Image 1: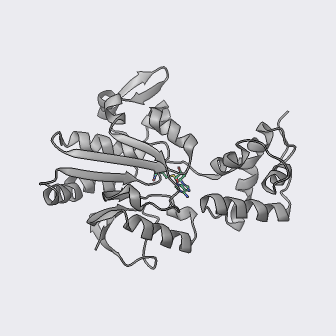
Image 2: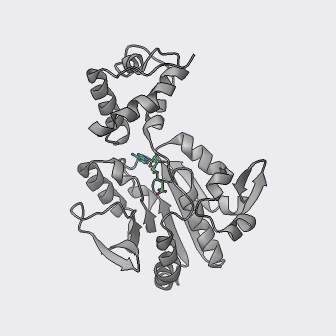
Length: 276
Ligand SMILES: C[S@@+](CC[C@H](N)C(=O)[O-])C[C@H]1O[C@@H](n2cnc3c(N)ncnc32)[C@H](O)[C@@H]1O
C-alpha cells in the first residue's frame, strides 16, 4: 500500500538538507521543503521504511541499506533537459563561435568540448549533431559529458529517448537522419553516440585533469548551488579551459561577482563567456 505523506520533523529537515548539501552541493531552500517529501517518499517506500522520518535514521547512521544514500541524492537532483535547449546559443555556436575557434585551431585541427552537467545527454548529443552538420571530417572533435548521477549517465550512454523527448527541440529532419526507431522510443545512432564520452564527475571535485577544453557547457546547474560553491566551480572550470575558450551558462545564470576571468560576449540574444 502506498505510504501516506507525513510531515518531516524539523530536526530531520535540517539533517536531510545538510546531507544533500554535503553530498551534492545542492541547496534545498526553505520554500522547497515540499520537494523533500515528494521526492523522498518513493525512496522510503521502495526500501520499506514507514516514512521519510524513518529514512532519516539511516542518514544518522543507525542502520545500513546498500545504495539508499545514493538514491536520496539521485532523487533530489533535477534532470530536466532537452535537445538544442536555448537554441540561440547553438545558432551562435554554428555561425560565429565555432568558425572563430576553427580558424584559431586550424593547424592543430582539434577541438575539445565539455558538457559539465550533462543529465540524460541531450546537450552533448545536440552538439555532436551540430558538429556533424558542419562537415569537420578532417578534425578531431572530442565531447566529454559528465554528471554527478551515475543513473542518469547510463540513460545518456544508451541514448534512447521517448517520443515526447524527441518532440522537444529536435529539428524534424534530424530525427530521420540521426535516430533509429526502437520500439516506441528513438535511439540516437551509434555514429553520434560514439562522438561522446560519458563519465561521472562531481563538479565540486578537481576537474583540471579533464581539459583542456575550447568550449564548456555548464548550464542549469549553478542555479542549485550557493555563491561559494559556484565560485569554486567556476574557478575549477576555468582551470580546464584553453585561453580564449568559451563558457556557456543558461540565461538564468551569471558569473558576475563570482569571477572576473571571463569576458561577456553577446551574439544576438546568445550570451557566451570568453576566458580572458
Ligand atoms: C537541470 S540538469 C541540466 C542539464 C543540461 N545541462 C541542460 O542545461 O539542459 C542538472 C544536472 O546537474 C547534475 N548535478 C547536480 N549536482 C551536481 C554536481 N555537484 N556535480 C555534477 N553534476 C551535478 C544533475 O544530476 C543534473 O543532471
